[in-house]
Image (cartoon, helix red, strand yellow):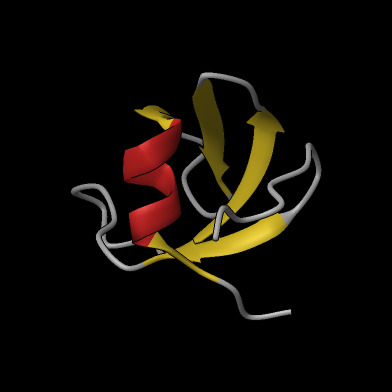
Length: 59
């Protein structure tokens, strides 16, 4: 079942980027999902299928 990913949602990624941060804010959705790291500000973009596999909801 697809996740309901909305702009502004806070998520934790099971596999994060190199800085080791885990908490992200969703800044764009659609075919691709854009995340902004809440610690270092780095932006990452994942296709929706990969994003749904990596997201761990914590709210």
